[in-house]
Image (tube, rainbow over the protein chains, first blue to last red):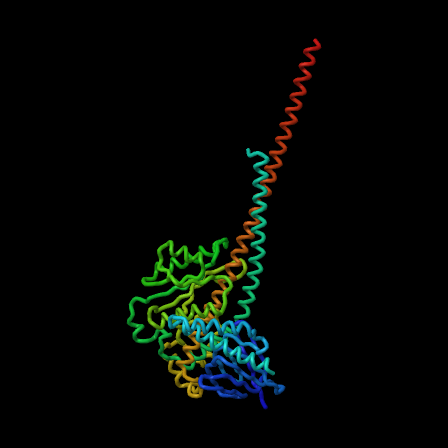
Length: 137
Length: 336
């Protein structure tokens, strides 16, 4: 199985840079997978979980917040605000963030604030979901 | 001349001040290192974003959107409502850092007709309000410890206003650290985005500046075509096969919207971090200068103090000798 070069770049670090066999990411209307020699593409990435298979056939997962993915010349670049491994997630912090966002959502606020708190709520929920999976194992 | 006691008090107070400036210097240098690290960490993300935006524009050169200033409506507007996002610091004692910012902003304001100021940092807010410039009231963000969340909130706010057409142009005014000795005020346009032809033009100009060695690269990147005739620069993009094959999911408009938010957030974050680093650097330099001045003053004062002390001793000795002499004379007189 041929491989491609995968770069996952979050805003505070380069999360992963190396060879990869397949990547699955949450797209606009469901999950999408990219394998080697994919055609040129740019797609939006939603908040959720990504899975990628490395050269040694192990699957890895991570939680991403929204961003974009670009496929060009057998190189896949995933640009997201944040990217974390499930074991890195601070469950308490995520829960606190979720509660805060829910509280803010229920309060009367402007459209703009609504957008911000809804985005933080979905981020917190994605994190919690992933962290829950990890601790359950 | 001041008395020895007075000079001693002065020396002590200067020593205390020096302790503070030295401590602030240390703190600033630590914060500077952290800010520099942050800047380095965010660089790959930022460059990646720029590449993506260039990529989209390359494949869809004549996309018409509110985020570009190329709609017919935009052409008809005579007065552009401008917004300046000005990044200043929360506290002073940073040399000319804030003053350079004020000067640049005031110059911008004097050129613009209709504008609003979005000020980050307490010092700037106070200053511009005092000058009666149109500072937006409920835009209270602090300049210390820049976070991606803060950048996101700022972006959301600005883009919202922009989409409601309350603003036509958004500029970001911040300080960039060229090197540890030099800082520069940067004025960058955030919105509307630069269109493909504009970026092309810029690249070309840059290439001309560097002459020769880069021109090949630019041509390669944009499909090896001479740029002397501007009219043709759009055509070849449309004929190139890349467009038809290029998959944009779910749609160029959606992607562009997302990209604009991400790009703006990235840019604002980058600027916040850059400004933070410059501020700490300016403060570090100011504190270094203050410490140097204090030690120079201490040097002068200690000489003065020694002189005064010596003078006092000399005077005392003279008095003692004078007294002794007078006594001797008296005794001689009595013997006669």
